[in-house]
Length: 417
Length: 143
Ligand code: SF4
Ligand code: SF4
Image 1: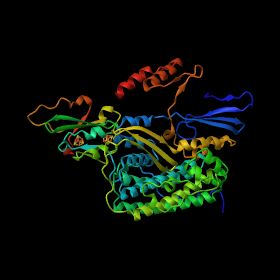
Image 2: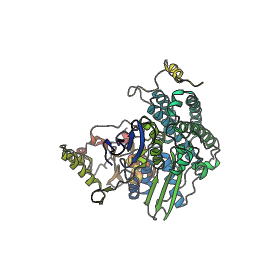
Image 3: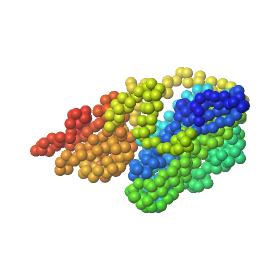
Image 4: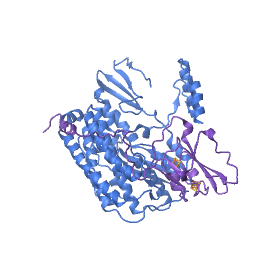
């Protein structure tokens, strides 16, 4: 794919690459838009700029070490990925997770959803030039971050879930703190819903932008709020309940706007549901142990974990061979399911809508990136590069252009030894 | 009523309020209880089972045997991800986390922390604890 602006000879349309650096969000991904004037006539996306090889790395590490690697698939849905993976492993090893642990997983999971949706609200505000909203929603997000730090010991990678339960119990004082924080957050969310329904700037800017109707959402395999805003009534928490969700009463929020405005309303609605779920879980939390012993070696078998992450359904496949390391791990993050829909949403819209349309699926590109195979277009030969060769070819590429990084490279290599 | 500028009231309400941010580093935030910060090692409790080294996801912790029931722990703060798996793996409670979080350093060597057991009086000091690694031998019992 050529990474430069070019004019298409037959139609006179112009192809413009957006990204891979900073294509609206601060994560690298490359979009190629074909423009006729200000209008986008075609769009395509190219993944692979943030590939970290996590699936492969999982196979090289023990199950215990994988807990921390899997958590780092995403900084925002760390609990979602971890719990999804752990659920799959627990299924293989037939570990019976205590009730109390299931409840704690739900509480942390919903707190994470609150944190993620408030974060999204701020990002969306920023993308439409409404930075006041960004400042306020992120200020309020601090409340939930503090609560998570208090429950888990860290603001971002909580590390709450582990095989056979959770690592930390919730004390009665913490329950009180969480309930208090949830009350404040609920007040604030009501205000944001009020704002979203009455603030004309938001309504005008988001309505009709990034349309993804019900049938298209199904056809393109969209998940999470992106699909639910188009009226797709799907939620793993209800359809294939895990942890303590079978005992929770909640509504799956759907909307029929099918645009970015609809996605905003769905996320705000989900916040209100999350508060209710947290209250139910905390008040009905059963007594008892919060962790059972799990073996270090997992018996041979395979399982798939499903989890409704804030961005949509997350799927982890784990295959074990009886050793203490998994044989295969496969991660399908929600952004991978939603990214196809983005190209559809961009078509026939203005170029200026691109940032908010991309941001509206709440993408997480590093979760999504996959291995890149290099194919020489002239000879049709395929090639795979390992780290050292990749570095070497980078150095050569720059040397041809008069910049020599080889000495710096040597120095860095030495200092990292 | 649908009007622009709805958020203006919020903005005006905030005018007289104190900022939501902290004046760090003058003002230090209290760390959450159970915050996972820099690790601490108690040499007298360690039995050298090496489970911490085996389970550490980033290879940040090394245990060396100095002598009979004498163990030294070396933690590389630049590798440690503060996950506290080692604390969990240690059945002897020889490791614990503290709430120390200001660990940045421009000298890579200073990020290696060695907790060493006091060598028994009648033996030579171990040769593998050297100042050349820029490590700061610390005795947690004197802290
Ligand atoms: S806290 Fe985690 S990364 Fe750090 S030494 Fe312990 S196990 Fe290793
Ligand atoms: S797990 Fe505990 S007892 Fe075992 S080597 Fe590590 S610190 Fe020592």
